[in-house]
Length: 485
Image (cartoon, rainbow, N blue to C red; front, side, top):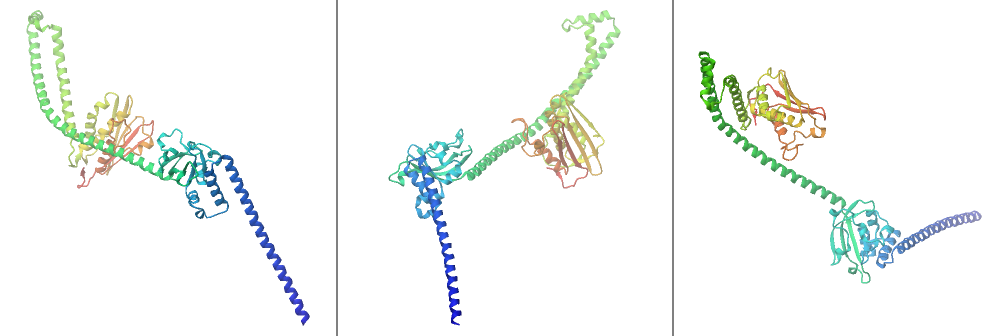
């Protein structure tokens, strides 16, 4: 029994010795690993310090680099290394000597700027200045701190040429060191914030411009409204002398017809020789038999032309009074053909002799509930826009159709057409492709609203080079509560 126990003790002893040897080996390997790691770290530190020393012999710069390298390589808590280490850890840091030569740049600054140590250290800090971007000033310059601590937003240039913004503090090294001369920069990247602010500023500027444009357009609208009222008054005042001219012209026609009959009767009753003597008796008239015959034949045509001109003036005045009528009105049965005729009459100065207008099926359209003056305004705007878009001669085609519920009109031109990006905004208020002073951008927007108030719809189709077509749908029946706005 004793022999068995001795063997057991010997076995346990051997196992303990084996476990001790294994543990010792593991511990030794761990110690060797940490010693090797420490050695490699010290080699890295020496290499980085040696590389930096080859670039500059500035004492403060080397001190800053030593703090950063040791903290990074040995994974030290930088808060325990003092304020300089905390600044290096939290900010983008750059130091220069008194002449502005860069003596140190921490990792954050290098990462933000895209530069390397060898590209920055020993170079003048102006290497960070944007080239050809005067609008980006202020820039990093040590002279900002000549009178003490300076803080502000600066614009710098990366190694690839792109720009970035920093909120920068700059002050002399004498504030933190009695032995060193130069300047220290430290700041944070505010490029994203600056970009957002610039976008907001640009949006504010654009909105201010739009508001200014709206105010101008509203003032223009007020002037146009006043002009409409004045035009209606002028049209009313013109009616009186036009009526007098028309009446006098008709009376003159009667007088001339009577005189023509008297002269014709006289010619029949006396010889041609005596009639010629009769004409020569009044030397001031300077008229012979041939000239008299021309006058008698021409005067009816002259009076007819003059009468047509007066009737046209009357029609323009009637159309102008209807067109300038801007008071709310209840819808009444309206003839679309009459609205189009009125609009063509008013737009005649734009159409002139170069735009041919054709229309089909207008006379067959039923009356629709609506405002004649407002619908005339819609067609007037479409005709004028088409005429102004067409260069040289062209054609405006008006087609119409209807069913039990809707009256559909199409106003098409063979002009240059409209680009798709413009087509999406064509009914927006104040949007215009015309030069400044040539258009308000309100015409099509008002037309769209008028058709909508009539319970209808207005759409447009166009492609560059194929012309433009406006489609108008108007209901044949309207609620009694709906009226022109």
